Image 1 (tube, rainbow, N blue to C red):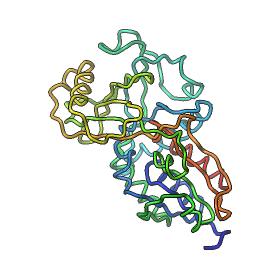
Image 2: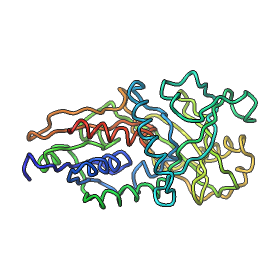
Image 3: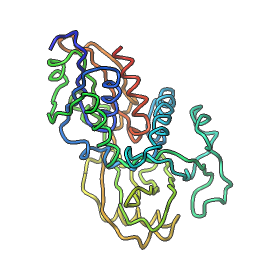
Image 4: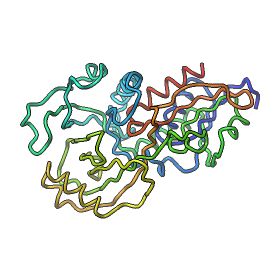
Length: 320
């Protein structure tokens, strides 16, 4: 492969990697995605996937990335059966509008609720109609869109970014938690999230009560065929085995908000490891091995879905 060709290797096939690949292919790049496992087995596949900047830094860059993604998801919501994206109403409990960054002023219909509007929930609360993404549908849609643009996905374990640099003039590192080893970057650590999937007893709106300083959160997201209940935020915990006591506590917390959840039939349990980086998202370009242009795009914590399109466009700008 000529070093001046337009080929790009994107390492990683989670929502960050696939979205980045789609944007690059849409700009005429020849894109190959290298991935250790299919997108359906990544952390992204486990995500409840509500658009909202949660557990992600730096705030001064996150707002713009999030708003760019919001516009894309609003467009994709016109075709929910195809894209997996819907606009769904819901409530963020324990949040004040004036505590959010400037980005919040550009979110339509985001409004403060009266203190007693949501029984059982911590006040204050915000109401909004936001994108809710069904990841088992959205990830295959991203891959299909990439392949329609001429991109390919290859199953290949990457131990060092130099492996990709040896084969392409441009490499984008979207390895998430894997960046800890393949960069290497010791600032990347897992924050474990456990979820419970139940039959939906008729709930059509989402709810969150997430204290970023706490290891427990309370949320439920109505997705097709299921209601997703959460959650946890256990820093440094790499266990992918669901804990029964944690699952019971999640159901109990959600049932305080919607009592009918207590009797909902459990469909399954899920665990994912959020790729949190102590210094915030790393999105920058450098000269890589063999004269390769190397762009890092990792460390998105609990908001990979929220910033995916904004970060992908930033990567495309870095590559020129």
